[in-house]
Length: 415
Image 1 (cartoon, one colour):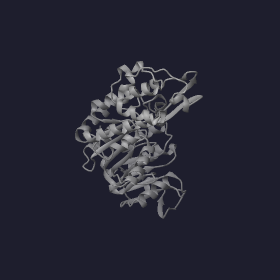
Image 2 (image 1 turned 180 degrees about the vertical axis):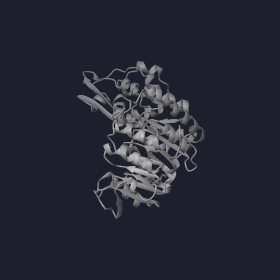
Image 3 (image 1 turned 135 degrees about the horizontal axis):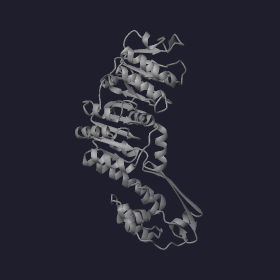
Image 4 (image 1 turned 90 degrees about the horizontal axis):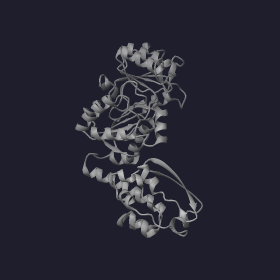
């Protein structure tokens, strides 16, 4: 793993943007505007041979024509032009390039592979492609097309998803939560989780590290960096693709197979990372030290509140109050909701009162006029988003009531 030349990536003195245009909604134009309105104090160069002036800045025809050596080159050009731009940036002496462009494909003979080889020849570090960019609030550096730049702080975010970076920037702005840096790594052809974990583990401005993981390309490198980082500061991770459909979405997003969720869960535990299960818990953990007992207790309370919300939707208020106070089994017995115990739940750890109670709940006779059938007649479709994962269960109303859904809720693992 290498932090080679990453210091200039997070504290540049000069930036070149290749692909900026006067079109209002173009990516290059948004990045140039964000850098200017954000208050970046270094020099800014625009590379576009088709225009002499863009947004008040004089353009140049090529990277070679820039008067000084830029620390960073931001690339928002068509995919076919990216390898040549990367080669020119490396030959010019730039330290890093941020490739915003998507659609470079994967594998041998792809544009992404050609860009990687060109960068390696000159020792140029690459962030991306297919990424949102890099934001460093303390340096007034917003080389992204995110709508807002959050205040400066001590949280570092590393994400494969650009949407997560944009969402966290917006959330930080609204709640006055500061970040030391936000990095969207996209397809991570060069700079990856391992490199950035090593960098932020030694960064004095960073107190905690947040990860949004879709896939890990180099498991050995990641585990080594994660162990080292977790010894120096809290590292909180959220892994997408916990369920089959979301795993497919993650695979199509960055072109890498998401992998078994159980493997990731074991790896995070072994490395000393705190895993959260959805963005809400990531937001809960972000402002505080996630390794403290108080923070863990707060996350546990947030999980239990969502379980209570689920019960409130499903059962009358009187039954919910008994479920949260006396246990779920008592609520089932007294409410006659017709839940059944899950046969697969025996191997699950009792991490919440609801799960423990569901394991011991006994089927109760269901009457046509019970709480559920009286309010959910006909075809019952339970569609709800719980703990960040959408779970759809279809239960048909039969003569004696509604089929049990406790099995499906337990099997989802959404606790």
